[in-house]
Image (cartoon, rainbow, N blue to C red; front, top):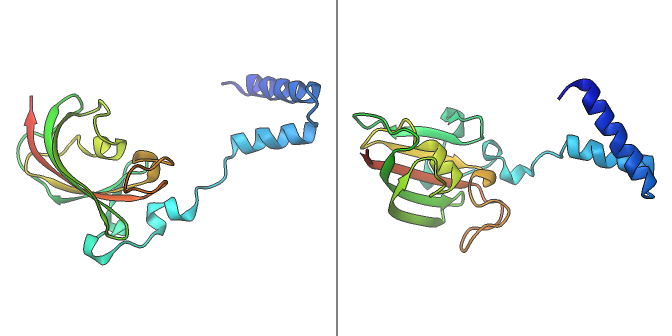
Length: 168
């Protein structure tokens, strides 16, 4: 969006807000808040948290995707790497950061279709059969503000994903 279009849009929002009885100050504050949302709570930022020693998480040595997923390869695997659109058989184990196990299963999924939480889906491309990857998943790539049974809202999750096979 060009700067002039943005200024016109902002002026229109302010004018509309004033016409419906809101003060220009409250409308301006509302616009400012929407353009500059507050930072996330510290207990949802993976790099700011402590993890149970048994999980072996060391965020300072993990790579980070632009979406916020932290990951490290525990073992690289061999062969042709998985790619978006491939069907893969994976073994997943998941924990809360305090070490409470919340997930353990073997599933077959197609990468990029949303069959698993976003944090796992983002971690699969590039993995090779036999490879294992540790993930630290922020709430927005896990179960978010809703949580699910056994997983509280806004939980940071730790997963280990093992790629058993790529089914092309």
